[in-house]
Image (tube, rainbow, N blue to C red):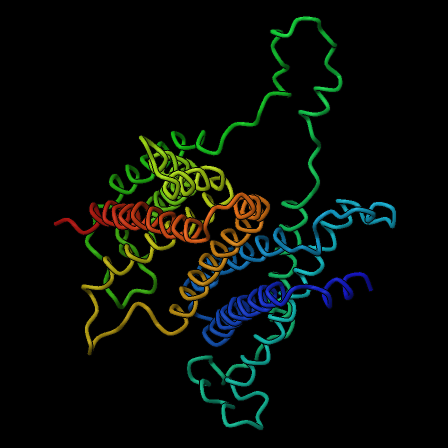
Length: 408
């Protein structure tokens, strides 16, 4: 009942986010059902079916990542005054967020099942019935136990991730400060646990190191030419399938870019505010530095996915022929669209969260007489600075990724 009342009183933007989660979950569930249908219709091609199922893990992870970001920024699951008195503390609120996320993903899974059955021709009664029976292997019976198991995987993973990410954390710093003995000296050093948390740009060296290790691993294992388009999801470095070393290098490079994201945004803001900045440039730089932790990881994930997409186009693009086979079919395009949409929506959600978090500062500046044009100018300068930083960096990472793989 409480969850229903909170949902009814939520902002329309919150409902839109939940609908987007349900839509992304329906796309991921549809891909899982397609992989299951291919496995049932082609029992002799177990390796190919396994590869299709494994590649469904990428959009599945993207949907879980987006669902957790939406649950974290949901106003209904944030601590409120008086909620502890009625038995809804931080732990119960995290469980409530997990339940709401599971419901959204469950609705998307049901929509995916209905759409899959309709396109296969199992339901009938509409003009779309059976239009994709050949692509979806409509001649083979669908095992309901396997279908329901795969469709229930996403709600369970999303709810578990919400519980883990949104669980209440003990304030070690305040506890250590309360237990620290009082001293008369004002110069006494503070306990290590009571010191200020590490800034977001502290992970920049580690991110650069991990990124360099990933690129070095790719350069070491990638000595084969671009894959032939008739091989299912083949990658350079191995003739019959995906190279484990190359995949590990890509994952390392992506993780390094995500880890370095907050530091890159922090130093971008520091450069904007360097020298003798004007009001617009100073405000833009300070806001970027303050929002580096919130924006850094989502933008890092977005850049990693964009770099992977550019690298895939660079590798597979020259091999395409208008009359020949294509490595990217409609289902692969659907998976890529789900991943890109989820990471983009997560970055937009993080940007809106940072805007809400500094609403008090925005109102205070307006009360002090700062013109609205200065605020709009700061937004334009921030957007231009991030675009000027991240777009060339994404292109550079993609080129460095494909350079050892496309060389003769």
